[in-house]
Length: 382
Image (cartoon, rainbow, N blue to C red; front, side, top):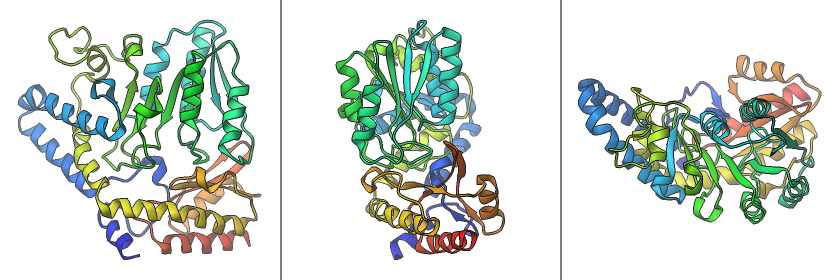
């Protein structure tokens, strides 16, 4: 595909490696990377002028751009470096009591599980991970299993919008609606969502939403955000107490002051959001992403045919990622073999006592990448 080959030139990736792991850490657009260098040069040319006078306005612009893109008010989001940090801010600020249940699933990201385990052990609450059916036949499987696991002690519903280990799109809109009707707080881990699938927080209507921009929006690393519904903003304590706390002279909200200003640091990556979003919304990139989504079911069929495994969910629950079971093989050895011997960068990990291989197909990938993966897996398994 000519457009696909052209798109590769927008990234800095080593072309000697087959990159099929966009979902883990993303890949920065050249334009966004150069934009960050521009801001870093301005910072170092006059640090005082930049931090005092330029930084506040530029970060406001980035917040404005992002809020329009994800469908929320600009004063309801603030920037964090990653979702793990944002979840820690939420978890530490909630008024959890002995016996309260935070309900998640067995598809959540491991770092989030650790954060909830730590907090609930400190406060005497419980983090309950619901075991979902496997394989999943429809989104109704997810919805009904979660709803049937809710009890009077369930205070918080914490779920992924797109799961990290399995790449499955969860029915979060229906779950948020059910939770609102039953006075349950919703915290949505949307790390894989912005730039991957459509996101409109206003329609979704969660209490908290966490998203990453350095994955599928392809900004420089360390750009994530936290959305908090207005009635919860005063209840979340800042992780870091600095100049932003009780800054009564600021024209920003207390919520943003508390969580965004941690002292002197390089915030240039945040200023690159406008340029990354503009590139993301070009016809070239939109067409490229549509092509990638159409390829995911095909890629999954190719791999499952080689390994003689079934699909773990329907095609309509996938975006640009798919996870497949790798039978009778050590996940560490497989991952090491793929990168060391064949220069294929792809995650292979242990999940629910199974070895899982997860493919991400981004606009810089080509048919040759999948042909190579197919050839190598065939050699290994057959």
